[in-house]
Length: 330
Image 1 (spheres, rainbow, N blue to C red):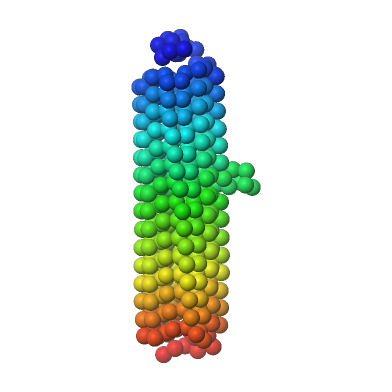
Image 2: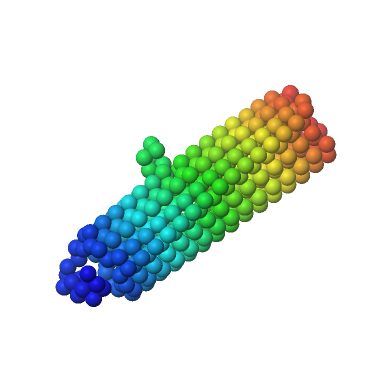
Protein backbone atom coordinates (compact mmCIF):
# COMPACT_ATOMS: atom_id res chain seq x y z
CA UNK A 1 0.00 0.00 0.00
CA UNK A 2 1.47 3.35 -1.02
CA UNK A 3 1.01 6.84 0.42
CA UNK A 4 -1.55 7.90 -2.20
CA UNK A 5 -3.78 4.93 -1.39
CA UNK A 6 -3.57 5.62 2.36
CA UNK A 7 -4.53 9.25 1.84
CA UNK A 8 -7.34 8.36 -0.59
CA UNK A 9 -8.91 5.84 1.77
CA UNK A 10 -8.50 8.15 4.78
CA UNK A 11 -10.27 10.94 2.87
CA UNK A 12 -13.13 8.47 2.35
CA UNK A 13 -13.39 8.02 6.13
CA UNK A 14 -11.47 4.74 6.22
CA UNK A 15 -9.23 5.03 9.27
CA UNK A 16 -8.46 1.37 10.06
CA UNK A 17 -5.04 0.33 8.76
CA UNK A 18 -4.20 -2.10 11.55
CA UNK A 19 -1.22 -4.31 10.72
CA UNK A 20 -0.55 -2.56 7.39
CA UNK A 21 2.86 -3.06 5.75
CA UNK A 22 4.16 0.48 5.20
CA UNK A 23 7.91 0.05 5.41
CA UNK A 24 9.65 3.17 4.09
CA UNK A 25 6.42 5.01 3.25
CA UNK A 26 6.51 8.81 2.89
CA UNK A 27 3.63 10.52 4.69
CA UNK A 28 5.39 13.77 5.49
CA UNK A 29 2.98 16.58 6.44
CA UNK A 30 -0.03 14.24 6.01
CA UNK A 31 -3.20 14.94 8.02
CA UNK A 32 -4.10 11.56 9.55
CA UNK A 33 -5.71 12.55 12.83
CA UNK A 34 -7.29 9.57 14.63
CA UNK A 35 -5.94 6.95 12.20
CA UNK A 36 -5.54 3.36 13.38
CA UNK A 37 -2.04 2.11 12.58
CA UNK A 38 -1.76 -0.34 15.44
CA UNK A 39 0.72 -3.17 14.77
CA UNK A 40 1.62 -1.52 11.45
CA UNK A 41 5.10 -1.82 9.95
CA UNK A 42 6.36 1.76 9.61
CA UNK A 43 10.06 1.08 9.76
CA UNK A 44 12.12 3.78 8.05
CA UNK A 45 8.91 5.72 7.29
CA UNK A 46 8.95 9.48 6.75
CA UNK A 47 6.31 11.08 8.95
CA UNK A 48 7.91 14.46 9.55
CA UNK A 49 5.47 17.28 10.33
CA UNK A 50 2.51 14.90 9.95
CA UNK A 51 -0.63 15.21 12.07
CA UNK A 52 -1.34 11.97 13.93
CA UNK A 53 -3.13 13.45 16.94
CA UNK A 54 -5.08 10.75 18.80
CA UNK A 55 -3.79 8.12 16.37
CA UNK A 56 -3.55 4.49 17.43
CA UNK A 57 0.03 3.30 16.94
CA UNK A 58 0.05 0.69 19.66
CA UNK A 59 2.61 -2.06 18.97
CA UNK A 60 3.54 -0.39 15.69
CA UNK A 61 7.13 -0.64 14.45
CA UNK A 62 8.60 2.81 13.85
CA UNK A 63 12.25 1.83 14.00
CA UNK A 64 14.45 4.54 12.45
CA UNK A 65 11.37 6.48 11.30
CA UNK A 66 11.76 10.19 10.51
CA UNK A 67 9.17 11.82 12.76
CA UNK A 68 10.71 15.24 13.26
CA UNK A 69 8.05 17.80 14.13
CA UNK A 70 5.24 15.22 14.06
CA UNK A 71 2.11 15.88 16.12
CA UNK A 72 1.26 12.82 18.21
CA UNK A 73 -0.62 14.56 20.99
CA UNK A 74 -2.86 12.13 22.91
CA UNK A 75 -1.78 9.31 20.58
CA UNK A 76 -1.74 5.67 21.67
CA UNK A 77 1.85 4.40 21.40
CA UNK A 78 1.61 1.59 23.94
CA UNK A 79 4.46 -0.88 23.34
CA UNK A 80 5.35 0.83 20.06
CA UNK A 81 8.90 0.31 18.80
CA UNK A 82 10.48 3.74 18.25
CA UNK A 83 14.05 2.60 18.57
CA UNK A 84 16.48 5.02 16.89
CA UNK A 85 13.58 7.13 15.59
CA UNK A 86 14.02 10.85 14.93
CA UNK A 87 11.44 12.69 17.04
CA UNK A 88 13.27 16.01 17.13
CA UNK A 89 10.72 18.69 18.04
CA UNK A 90 7.86 16.19 18.03
CA UNK A 91 4.66 16.96 19.94
CA UNK A 92 3.74 14.04 22.20
CA UNK A 93 1.69 15.96 24.71
CA UNK A 94 -0.54 13.58 26.67
CA UNK A 95 0.58 10.60 24.56
CA UNK A 96 0.41 7.09 26.03
CA UNK A 97 3.90 5.61 25.68
CA UNK A 98 3.65 2.86 28.28
CA UNK A 99 6.08 0.10 27.42
CA UNK A 100 7.31 1.89 24.30
CA UNK A 101 10.89 1.36 23.15
CA UNK A 102 12.49 4.78 22.69
CA UNK A 103 16.07 3.65 23.16
CA UNK A 104 18.55 5.73 21.15
CA UNK A 105 15.68 7.91 19.89
CA UNK A 106 16.27 11.59 19.20
CA UNK A 107 13.76 13.49 21.35
CA UNK A 108 15.66 16.76 21.39
CA UNK A 109 13.23 19.63 22.11
CA UNK A 110 10.27 17.22 22.02
CA UNK A 111 7.08 18.09 23.91
CA UNK A 112 6.27 15.19 26.25
CA UNK A 113 4.23 17.20 28.74
CA UNK A 114 1.70 15.01 30.58
CA UNK A 115 2.83 11.95 28.61
CA UNK A 116 2.60 8.49 30.21
CA UNK A 117 6.08 6.96 30.01
CA UNK A 118 5.71 4.19 32.56
CA UNK A 119 7.81 1.16 31.64
CA UNK A 120 9.19 3.04 28.63
CA UNK A 121 12.71 2.20 27.48
CA UNK A 122 14.66 5.46 27.08
CA UNK A 123 18.19 4.14 27.40
CA UNK A 124 20.58 6.26 25.36
CA UNK A 125 17.80 8.59 24.16
CA UNK A 126 18.57 12.25 23.54
CA UNK A 127 16.09 14.36 25.52
CA UNK A 128 18.11 17.57 25.49
CA UNK A 129 15.73 20.50 25.92
CA UNK A 130 12.68 18.24 25.97
CA UNK A 131 9.59 19.21 27.97
CA UNK A 132 8.43 16.47 30.33
CA UNK A 133 6.40 18.70 32.59
CA UNK A 134 3.81 16.59 34.37
CA UNK A 135 4.97 13.41 32.60
CA UNK A 136 4.41 10.12 34.41
CA UNK A 137 7.46 7.88 34.75
CA UNK A 138 6.60 6.45 38.14
CA UNK A 139 7.12 2.92 39.37
CA UNK A 140 4.08 0.93 40.40
CA UNK A 141 5.02 -2.29 42.17
CA UNK A 142 7.89 -2.75 39.72
CA UNK A 143 5.34 -3.29 36.93
CA UNK A 144 5.79 0.12 35.38
CA UNK A 145 9.23 1.66 35.73
CA UNK A 146 10.92 3.89 33.18
CA UNK A 147 14.48 3.12 32.19
CA UNK A 148 16.44 6.26 31.39
CA UNK A 149 19.95 4.91 31.94
CA UNK A 150 22.41 6.73 29.75
CA UNK A 151 19.77 9.20 28.49
CA UNK A 152 20.63 12.86 27.97
CA UNK A 153 18.11 15.11 29.73
CA UNK A 154 20.25 18.25 29.83
CA UNK A 155 18.17 21.44 30.05
CA UNK A 156 14.97 19.34 30.03
CA UNK A 157 11.78 20.73 31.56
CA UNK A 158 10.65 18.14 34.11
CA UNK A 159 8.66 20.43 36.38
CA UNK A 160 6.18 18.36 38.35
CA UNK A 161 7.13 15.15 36.52
CA UNK A 162 6.40 11.88 38.31
CA UNK A 163 9.67 9.94 38.37
CA UNK A 164 8.93 7.80 41.40
CA UNK A 165 11.27 4.82 41.33
CA UNK A 166 12.67 5.79 37.92
CA UNK A 167 16.06 4.47 36.82
CA UNK A 168 18.15 7.59 36.22
CA UNK A 169 21.54 6.16 37.12
CA UNK A 170 24.37 8.06 35.40
CA UNK A 171 21.88 10.16 33.43
CA UNK A 172 22.85 13.70 32.40
CA UNK A 173 20.37 16.23 33.80
CA UNK A 174 22.66 19.24 33.68
CA UNK A 175 20.66 22.44 34.01
CA UNK A 176 17.32 20.60 33.97
CA UNK A 177 14.27 21.97 35.78
CA UNK A 178 12.93 19.36 38.20
CA UNK A 179 11.16 21.74 40.55
CA UNK A 180 8.29 20.03 42.40
CA UNK A 181 9.17 16.74 40.64
CA UNK A 182 8.40 13.44 42.36
CA UNK A 183 11.60 11.39 42.64
CA UNK A 184 10.84 9.19 45.63
CA UNK A 185 12.98 6.01 45.52
CA UNK A 186 14.49 7.12 42.21
CA UNK A 187 17.92 5.76 41.30
CA UNK A 188 20.17 8.76 40.55
CA UNK A 189 23.45 7.08 41.37
CA UNK A 190 26.30 8.83 39.56
CA UNK A 191 23.87 11.17 37.77
CA UNK A 192 25.03 14.58 36.55
CA UNK A 193 22.71 17.09 38.25
CA UNK A 194 25.00 20.07 37.88
CA UNK A 195 23.06 23.35 38.25
CA UNK A 196 19.76 21.46 38.26
CA UNK A 197 16.67 23.05 39.81
CA UNK A 198 15.15 20.71 42.42
CA UNK A 199 13.22 23.34 44.34
CA UNK A 200 10.47 21.64 46.30
CA UNK A 201 11.26 18.26 44.74
CA UNK A 202 10.44 15.01 46.54
CA UNK A 203 13.57 12.85 46.86
CA UNK A 204 12.63 10.75 49.85
CA UNK A 205 14.74 7.56 49.95
CA UNK A 206 16.30 8.41 46.59
CA UNK A 207 19.69 6.98 45.66
CA UNK A 208 22.07 9.87 44.95
CA UNK A 209 25.28 8.00 45.67
CA UNK A 210 28.23 9.81 44.04
CA UNK A 211 25.89 12.11 42.09
CA UNK A 212 27.04 15.58 41.06
CA UNK A 213 24.81 18.37 42.37
CA UNK A 214 27.35 21.14 41.95
CA UNK A 215 25.62 24.53 42.31
CA UNK A 216 22.24 22.80 42.29
CA UNK A 217 19.15 24.41 43.83
CA UNK A 218 17.39 22.21 46.39
CA UNK A 219 15.47 24.82 48.35
CA UNK A 220 12.66 23.15 50.34
CA UNK A 221 13.53 19.77 48.78
CA UNK A 222 12.44 16.66 50.66
CA UNK A 223 15.39 14.30 51.10
CA UNK A 224 14.40 12.12 54.04
CA UNK A 225 16.48 8.95 54.25
CA UNK A 226 18.16 9.71 50.92
CA UNK A 227 21.47 8.00 50.18
CA UNK A 228 23.80 10.91 49.36
CA UNK A 229 27.14 9.39 50.23
CA UNK A 230 30.07 10.97 48.38
CA UNK A 231 27.70 13.36 46.62
CA UNK A 232 29.06 16.67 45.30
CA UNK A 233 26.93 19.51 46.68
CA UNK A 234 29.59 22.19 46.37
CA UNK A 235 27.94 25.63 46.42
CA UNK A 236 24.49 24.03 46.30
CA UNK A 237 21.50 25.82 47.83
CA UNK A 238 19.68 23.60 50.33
CA UNK A 239 17.89 26.35 52.22
CA UNK A 240 15.11 24.82 54.34
CA UNK A 241 15.73 21.39 52.81
CA UNK A 242 14.31 18.39 54.71
CA UNK A 243 17.12 15.90 55.34
CA UNK A 244 16.39 13.80 58.45
CA UNK A 245 18.19 10.43 58.48
CA UNK A 246 19.94 11.22 55.18
CA UNK A 247 23.32 9.60 54.55
CA UNK A 248 25.90 12.23 53.57
CA UNK A 249 29.14 10.61 54.63
CA UNK A 250 32.13 11.89 52.61
CA UNK A 251 29.85 14.40 50.86
CA UNK A 252 31.35 17.59 49.43
CA UNK A 253 29.40 20.57 50.75
CA UNK A 254 31.97 23.36 50.49
CA UNK A 255 30.24 26.77 50.55
CA UNK A 256 26.85 25.07 50.40
CA UNK A 257 23.83 26.89 51.85
CA UNK A 258 21.99 24.82 54.48
CA UNK A 259 20.29 27.64 56.34
CA UNK A 260 17.24 26.44 58.33
CA UNK A 261 17.73 22.91 56.95
CA UNK A 262 16.15 20.05 58.91
CA UNK A 263 19.04 17.60 59.42
CA UNK A 264 18.19 15.58 62.51
CA UNK A 265 20.03 12.23 62.70
CA UNK A 266 21.87 13.00 59.46
CA UNK A 267 25.17 11.21 58.84
CA UNK A 268 27.81 13.78 57.83
CA UNK A 269 30.83 11.76 58.85
CA UNK A 270 33.98 12.80 56.96
CA UNK A 271 31.93 15.34 54.97
CA UNK A 272 33.56 18.58 53.75
CA UNK A 273 31.50 21.59 54.87
CA UNK A 274 34.23 24.22 54.69
CA UNK A 275 32.67 27.67 54.48
CA UNK A 276 29.13 26.25 54.43
CA UNK A 277 26.19 28.26 55.76
CA UNK A 278 24.27 26.32 58.41
CA UNK A 279 22.72 29.16 60.34
CA UNK A 280 19.62 28.01 62.24
CA UNK A 281 20.05 24.47 60.85
CA UNK A 282 18.65 21.61 62.94
CA UNK A 283 21.38 19.02 63.51
CA UNK A 284 19.97 17.24 66.55
CA UNK A 285 21.43 13.73 66.99
CA UNK A 286 23.57 14.29 63.88
CA UNK A 287 26.64 12.13 63.36
CA UNK A 288 29.51 14.50 62.51
CA UNK A 289 32.55 12.31 63.10
CA UNK A 290 35.63 13.80 61.39
CA UNK A 291 33.45 16.24 59.43
CA UNK A 292 35.21 19.45 58.37
CA UNK A 293 33.31 22.60 59.38
CA UNK A 294 36.28 24.96 58.95
CA UNK A 295 34.94 28.54 58.79
CA UNK A 296 31.36 27.29 58.49
CA UNK A 297 28.55 29.48 59.79
CA UNK A 298 26.61 27.60 62.50
CA UNK A 299 24.97 30.66 64.02
CA UNK A 300 21.96 29.60 66.11
CA UNK A 301 22.24 26.01 64.81
CA UNK A 302 20.77 23.25 66.95
CA UNK A 303 23.47 20.66 67.75
CA UNK A 304 21.77 18.92 70.67
CA UNK A 305 23.18 15.40 71.14
CA UNK A 306 25.24 15.75 67.93
CA UNK A 307 28.49 13.77 67.76
CA UNK A 308 31.20 16.46 67.67
CA UNK A 309 34.09 14.75 69.42
CA UNK A 310 36.23 14.48 66.28
CA UNK A 311 34.66 17.31 64.25
CA UNK A 312 36.89 20.06 62.84
CA UNK A 313 35.36 23.38 63.95
CA UNK A 314 38.39 25.62 63.36
CA UNK A 315 37.18 29.11 62.55
CA UNK A 316 33.52 28.03 62.65
CA UNK A 317 30.96 30.61 63.81
CA UNK A 318 28.95 29.13 66.69
CA UNK A 319 27.33 32.24 68.11
CA UNK A 320 23.97 31.35 69.61
CA UNK A 321 24.30 27.68 68.65
CA UNK A 322 22.84 25.07 70.97
CA UNK A 323 25.67 22.69 71.74
CA UNK A 324 25.41 18.88 72.27
CA UNK A 325 24.98 19.34 76.04
CA UNK A 326 22.15 21.85 75.57
CA UNK A 327 24.18 24.92 76.41
CA UNK A 328 24.01 28.04 74.23
CA UNK A 329 27.36 29.01 72.76
CA UNK A 330 28.22 32.63 73.32
